[in-house]
Amino acid sequence: MHQQNNLKFPNLTILFAVLFLTYLFLRTGVLHEWVMLLGDFGYISALLIGIFFVSTFTVIPATAILFFLSESIGLFSVSLLAGIGAVLGDYIIFRFVKDDLVEELKSIFRLVAGDNVLKFHWIIHTKYFVWLSPVLGALIIASPFPDELGIGLLGMYKLNNKHFLTISFVLNTIGIFLLLSGVEAVV
Image 1 (cartoon, rainbow, N blue to C red):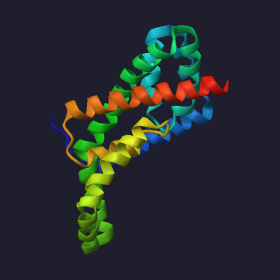
Image 2: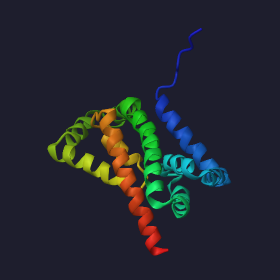
Image 3: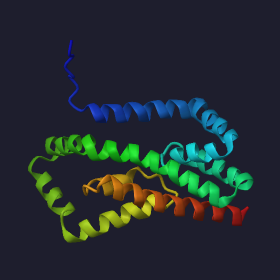
Image 4: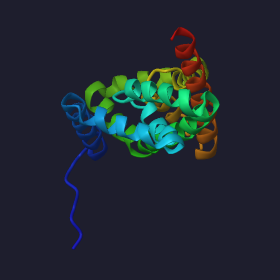
């Protein structure tokens, strides 16, 4: 029997539920222990920890583990494998943002802003925003800052999967390499 979904904003509900659960796991130490456990598996760890490198809630422990992994398996290997993992994490977020979340957010903007949403729509389609938004998104993905905002900026522009995956891999790999190189130079 087919059950009807009564949630008006199911993707936002899922997003906030995941954020809440992540917060709980972070506060109880479960998330930290789980991420630390992944550090025991060498090359596979670098790949798996790369997935966590892109999230607001796990970027700090992931960076620490990647640094320690780079001491044992090498900076280039960790950067490449974590870059691949980061692509997987980014892709999950990208599909979520690109497919349904943007439509739900548009509905909320219409409810809250009414006719003013047309002004917002005009601003994000100006030639300056159209050029600046992907550049800012790329810089955020390449930086050690969490990728969600950068992915959101790239997701607004109907970027196809192949281009997104390529951009994400290159930027994350370079960003991880530079971050770990910087930490290594300081330590």
